[in-house]
Length: 203
Image (tube, rainbow, N blue to C red):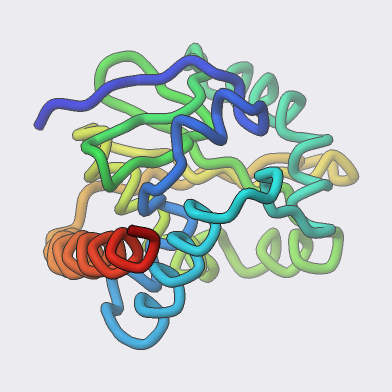
């Protein structure tokens, strides 16, 4: 597959423009499950596309915490693994599809960072990172598909503990990727239909 790596920093106006009108890995669960969630996602995506309102990236408490700690988590990951992480803005697979990775590693790897609150991180610390990978698997599998990479590291980080980072390597899984491909094709058709309807309305 052929893709384009965009360098605009995540959260900037340029990054918002890069990902506009595209299905992204942050909504991979809705895409892969290919049901009512996908209908809602596409409708919201196109409503934002055609709205004249100033585009703002969605945020919540967990995301804000992640933004504050992500740079530190990336540094700790590099020290822990010896891997050098390249920061990129957006990876565009086509006019409809892309992802915003937390980092790329060499020619084969990628990185997803999650900065968890104390209670969540402590539970995973005791029970193992494998117990929560299902929470992030759709997003990681879509990043793997879009970037055509061989592996992706999930890194959970919390600086309040002596063992501050937990890392799990994830590989492409056709069980998820096959569903994502079907969901993306469905989403593309829905986008095209909405575009046609909207263009007729404004003529």
